[in-house]
Length: 136
Image (cartoon, rainbow, N blue to C red; front, side, top):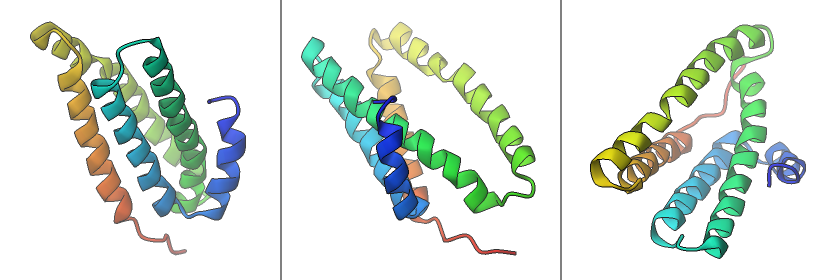
């Protein structure tokens, strides 16, 4: 999905505002995590999860690259993206920790996946509250 979806996602992201695309992406993440918990039991269902989650991730990558200049402008784009990247790297480094703790305490990853679903739901609600940016 990460190879072909950016080409398709670009046309969708260009036509729809981010405040519409972002909640759709979060809904796709919620659906894929629910699929992971309740339906993945073999290679076919795991492949379906990978394809759907990969599609959501590819669309998110394309839309996030349009978010930065739309909401923060171009003048200080490098500074804003640099500061944002710091937090993304920290999140990437700390992201696996809840999964390891979940596996150690409960014997599976479901608790961490449920927490991630909760965070995606909060992001979905926040995405629905986004307002169209205005020029200053």
